[in-house]
Image (cartoon, rainbow over all chains, first blue to last red):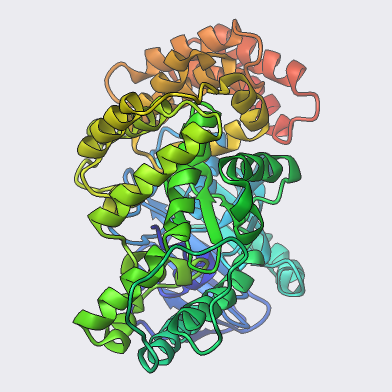
Length: 185
Length: 383
């Protein structure tokens, strides 16, 4: 039997034993490729190509900043028994959304849907944006949003998700404001 | 259910049951029978009742009333007398698996219903699981474990690291994998129930053969499916079931392909997507071929054949995807997304005229398309 895992909790442990560090409310550089300017203080853990930021705990809400994803990269790993989709620079926006949605589903979430895929600016770069919803392994509904762009064959992606009740709406405005501050370097 | 809770529940179960495990011959359970409160069996039931409560709110249970009524109807047709004692839960999971807990909780994964080509094949799995309940195999297995190891240590070890929904049942499955004799007993009783309740018992061997074909075509043949991992010697069992079916007086003749197809039609697309998401393209291709060969060919299956080739993206997969999408569009019930995928593949192949036509057809067919803005953006990009 597979071992479904709560997506947010799983992403929270990216980086193994890495400890959280504070993110101050000032411009932050993500992976050397783009910057955002948070308006509040977050806590973060960092892995190779992703930073996970949260305020109340990654099992309740988290924003994940991916930078420089290349061919063959995965959004996360679950276990060696669970084969996850890999990124391909040839993917169109529709296929990037499919890549994200399928990854979340393979991570153990249920009822995963990506909706409202539309063009969006990632800083000054033309990109895409879509909405997410899914249930955790405990049956709790989560909402999310994602915005990204492919620059020189590398995917830069921001995914914010939180429990539909209270936590997603709690930081949504701050996340939207922060998305508005994206600058590619 | 959380990892900690699952582990502590089962460890508690082990401790509880270890303190009062009993010996003696185990008779089959009678309809309506409940274990006496002081028995080790009552301890097993109590713990699985707790796990059942978590299962009910897990978000993985398929609650559609028609589908649940269909599964229950087949179960109750197999043996009316035990119908009220068994509670069936359809769990959204692409793999082929089912399990039977001692308290009457029967879990049927959607991967089984997708793969069953008819009512009789589904009845064969349900009958097999019901036989485990009737013959109290969980209790027998539990007492075998008690006689050979320290149960508390065993439980704690076996549940370590398991997290999330169904953790209790996952741990339970791994511990309570039935012996080969129990599996044979369940096969025999299940086949008898099929025959006596009107189902064609010859379908039982067929579903096993289908699984063997899938396993042999898997991209990861070393990775056993959940069912193979707890049900050994599939080939032997398929052959034995075929032989048993021929030996018995085949009073059962119901196969029920049309009804099964009609009842599962609203769900098949989601279940195929669940399977495709596993990215085991060899296995998926065989599954599609089996369904098509069973007479279920339609635009939906051909669409998924195209999706499989599109996602695999090796050698001549691009052209095969385009061919499958094109065939799907001529089959009547192809989903509108067929045209979107066709557009993406044609665009990638540099055929912008064909891509434009496909995207425009998608937008015309899907007036409320969630991604309309992006598809219109694609069309602008191609100008």
